[in-house]
Length: 144
Image (tube, rainbow, N blue to C red; front, side, top):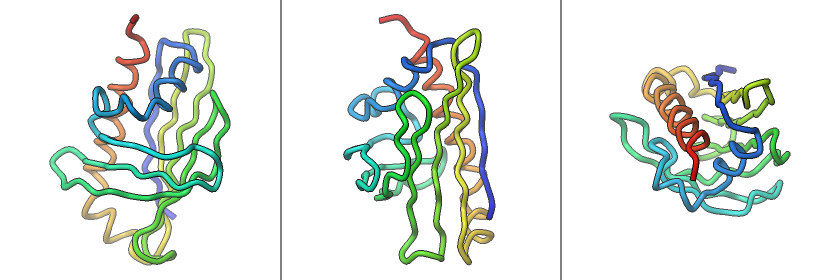
């Protein structure tokens, strides 16, 4: 198992961060990494997400929702081809702080192709996580 992990402090309530994160329709307006997202967020449902890492090629994934705990945690699992090749469990965890919210945005990868795939796309994917975190912070902290 390999993990890409990012964290950021956001000066907005966990509820506001959650609402921003769950508003898939607005992703094209602010999200540089997950440029499109659609689907129901209930456990067991499939999402359709278009990812575009900085300097990389875009790809559409269709992961299954694993956890939906409003205001706290959103998790899905996707795979490349068949299970066991290159699987990813993508996780957003929101933790309340005195000044707002601490976001942990990470993905755990498993499968026989983890090392070669992460050698190819790991740095760009990690940058994509960080870019998304910064954009989420800006969007959630802005006053409408």
